[in-house]
Length: 398
Image (cartoon, rainbow, N blue to C red):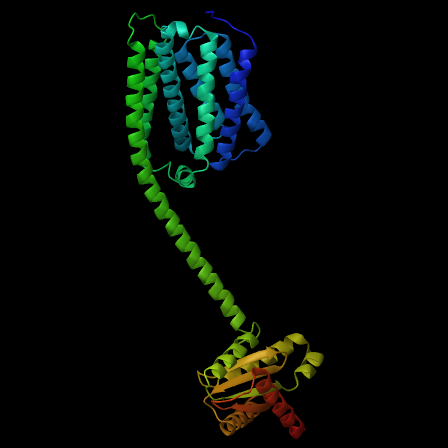
């Protein structure tokens, strides 16, 4: 049956495939990074335009070139609600439209050869119009779904489509679209030449061959750029992460109030020295009068008292010595390669200087614990020894 107008259940086929194609196109827009304020509305809009176009073509035999032109503008409506990234959008529209046209015209030519029916008469039959357009819609949906699983290609499409290398290829895409649009005119003309479908198929396949070659070359160039940029970005992120970790570690290694070492840092160094079997002296220090200053003048004055003590005490130490605040008014001093008597003399000297040089005097009690190179002591035992010695010094000074 050859009629020019049709209305029946067969129109459900292109309608269903149009909806599927619209849904995959909507999902692809999201994956490619296009904002969609109203996701449901955008999804309906994408599906409705396509369904209206292809169902109408199944009903009415209007010229094939007009179908291709309307399909192109339908894709423009779907991708151009905003003006940004025009180059990327035009590239995607031209490429997908070109592939769809090529497949559609090859199908028309093949069916014409198999059915031994001229292409213009073939397109007057709504059955063949519905079959060919449905196959193209299904293939386009499947291709889109497969492309969305190709992470490298998606990365290239998202970041590299504004590159200078794309512009010459864009001109080629425009030329190919115009070439196929003119070829589609042959499908509508009454031409008494049996080899016309063969010519149409061959020219389309030849054009597709060169298109794929150019696409492969362009993809190799853009993917190299993308991987280089990704590598640079990852290196920058790694540097930033290392810097952040270093800053965090630096902060955790320092007491936030006084700026000297933290409890965690001095205990780690203490463990390292013991594992390495190095001798050292550990001094436990308790600063006097901090509670009295806090109660009388406030915590701000107490903080200033701690800062002043830490700065004055640090000025009397070697670079290899580790001075740390372990909490409140308590401090630890780690003296590598220092004997117990040497440590005690050093502390007495510092205490005398801080008492005489400051008003009010910076007074403190201390206790030392010496650890030889070979020892069975634990970190807790060494700390306890120095702590007990500090309390003995405090009782003696009273």
